[in-house]
Image 1 (cartoon, one colour):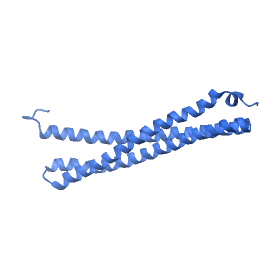
Image 2 (cartoon, one colour):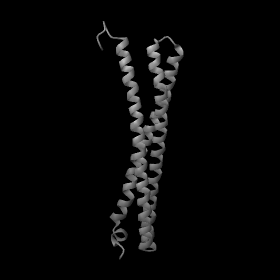
Image 3 (cartoon, rainbow, N blue to C red):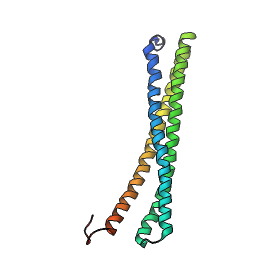
Image 4 (cartoon, one colour):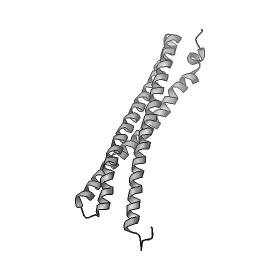
Length: 170
């Protein structure tokens, strides 16, 4: 089967192999930054719950709600850490795919189509690994957000119970 000359001779084909991972590198960077910003918030939340439990002035019902949140916040932090690892892996994979694509373009002009095809396959593998990292990160972030929402729902119910005027819900 003859080699596809479009990958070698068409500069736009080479550019698309370089540009796509570069754009996805930016997406992975934004995901990593937002995830790394969420991680300290989980730590702050854990400290706030610990302070509330240490004060001890709340009703037993309220303290029970906070005690139930502790393992959720721990799990949320682990999910955020896994999400951050996935985003970093995606970032490295997309950067690698871009670099491999650049090398492939140079190899195609210097030594021929065989090495260019090898580079295309390597870049594709790196790109697929990057997409896998983004998916893994997104799934973990979704589950971490779900745990946050459970805590918010519990606290909202607790606030409505404690601060209802004459038994009417807020």
